[in-house]
Length: 112
Length: 116
Image (tube, rainbow over all chains, first blue to last red; front, side, top):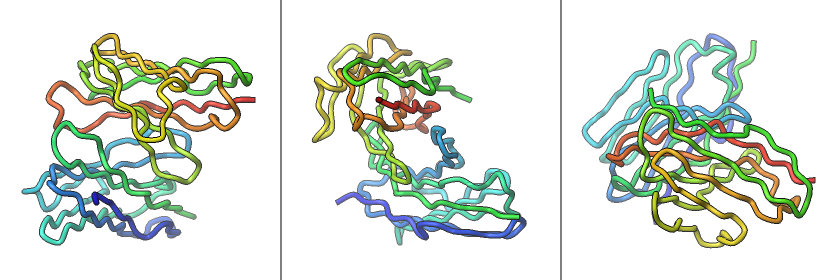
């Protein structure tokens, strides 16, 4: 069964600190993995997208990694800001053109 | 970057009425659009896949007569919640993929529906 599991479910950190969010998947065949940021009451916004051959991809203070062998991905946030408070969703595509498989998300709260 | 516009962002309606939500791809053509529903603190749940020029494909448990989907052009899909009830209150989000199908999905801003 195709599944995407994220951890932790929620996380609270102080402003300026770094954090890492985890995503494990059992989706097969694998096409790509995406990380989205979703602010409360808003639609998800893409942070990164990685295919099978990509190990690391950065977008500003966000760095995603992918290990296709172990089927794990991480999203590292550097020097967190209050505006980083949001839900971060890991999404895996089984193959091109098919529906996306969503993780339940990690809710990040950055406090001052 | 590509933009998907969803309208309205918020709507309040009375029980028994119907509400239409629009999803537009502004700068690309989308043969496929997806409609999601999201409950508070929960992940997005796929409701249906909207294909331009053909009938939508609904996920198991989603009533097609309740949630009418029309995808009449390559840039517009609509979701109509018919005879709305308070339990239909939720956050509805659409996403669209371009013609290539294997690039990132672009999401609309979401629509908060409240049925009173």
